[in-house]
Image (cartoon, rainbow over all chains, first blue to last red):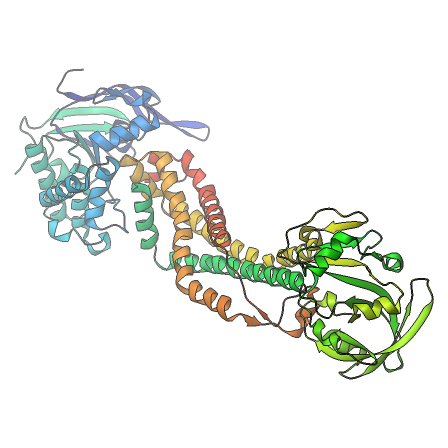
Length: 238
Length: 390
């Protein structure tokens, strides 16, 4: 794989058995993502966006074809190897934030680093650096229940980037946010993409998000309908 | 150490539900230790009393003697061999002559055991010195149970009839010179203690005895022809069996308590796994393996056991220490237990009991916590993130 290619899918197929019929979620998807991309997978509900992100994120395996992420074939990874890949190289941002309610903001962001067995001092520095990025260092001791939706998603972003992953996969990150918060979140991610060089891949059908994308991949019925490069620059800060 | 740390955080974060489980489980800890402590104390007190008052350090039985066969009593007597005689003279043993007899208290007939003992013996903790008074009438010592059941009082005379060595009936009056309070029923019920010399004369069995009780500090147990040594293990077997049967009955209480606690934890675990599927998915997405997720949820359940120990220590320690030092009075009905306890029972809590209980409850809690988590092993991260159980 080319050094700058970070994700490559080849004839990726995902089929879900639904009673007597099969539901084809991904139908021979061929995509290549370069390092530092800020790309979005767009399409209506059921088009296969989340399935694609799940396979790229090694949370799921393809029914056929292959997905190579950071030189690892997702379909051949063991549970342990997949967990290691996710823990060390991939950050996730979810539509519903998925923060741990009993942990503080600091502990939520710290969690991936605990799994990496990083030292306490290094963890603390990394967590605060990450919280500084999302302008929430002053809320480190708060519990998720004390945060607004926008703040919660910023904590989720901090958690995703705290380990400095090569790839961040964001599944509908603004779906539960109002317009203003959506813009703040996207601006934060654009900034992270530009300054850290982290590759961002979104799934979205939110027009507000699409405005920030450098590359837009349209999925319809599990097939790539359109793959367009919008801007050569990293992200879009306007 | 990440798993225990996370488990503690999660379980403490669960709030009231955790504390309810912990409190119920702590009851189980305290109940198990308290009840076993009571039975331990009961056994210890019973054994001590039995040793002090009846068994000493063991007994030599004359060859014919079988306490379970009353027909053996007639022939169960023999001359004391020189070896036993030496030990008796050195104060390391005391002979007891046991004969069947009949008394006629207040016009009624009652079959009893007539036991002869040296008034100046110190091997058994029986107030035999009351039998040393030189009187025209044979002095007799009875227990309070015997006094109550026969209506005999201090200073009363009662007619005793027995068979002598040759099987000839004879009778005379004895005077009740002391009524002893003893927790050991087997030296009290249906028994009259008289001076050994008097009984030997009455039965024409001079120099003879049925059993010889060895002092508990005397270690010599060499075999003696015609006499069988009965160790404390043999003598106390019935008592141990009786205490064991009481213990089994009593354990039902804490088994029920433990089951309640375990059920609550099992329920909590099942609920947790149902309610926290999304959290499991997130844990996996962040890089935790399924095995680690199972470990985390199992340890969370087991943490209940750890917290319960802490809670049990807080309220259980003063309670158990108070019971152990102050004891508690026993109702008269405990006399029907069939073994000596005394008027107050002092529980005994051994380190083995305490740590054994902790290990037992922790093990059961961990197993019960693990069982529902097995579902996680089949859980797909994508389904978990959607809140589905595979």
